[in-house]
Image (tube, rainbow, N blue to C red; front, side, top):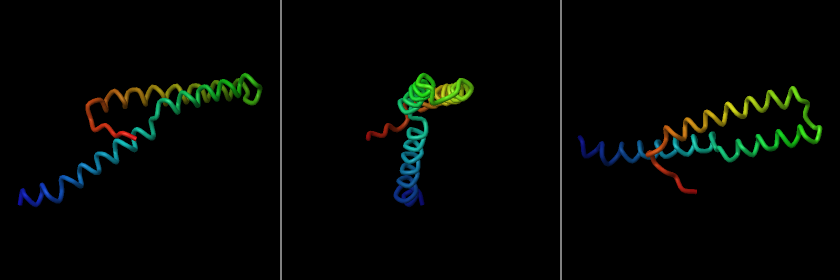
Length: 83
């Protein structure tokens, strides 16, 4: 019974763990969030975005970046997926 688990279940669970890690990496790509912060600031500076919209978006992006940093800190030591 344990042999069957080792042969059939463990590879599936490992694959799920890898997919989960990849999904978290994609959703919480800090570089992409930083780029969005820069884009938001640029749009505000050239007058394409009002100050209210700029401030709201800035707060959203900063909260998202903070969350991404916490998730990345928690993911330390888990499976590293190389692209």
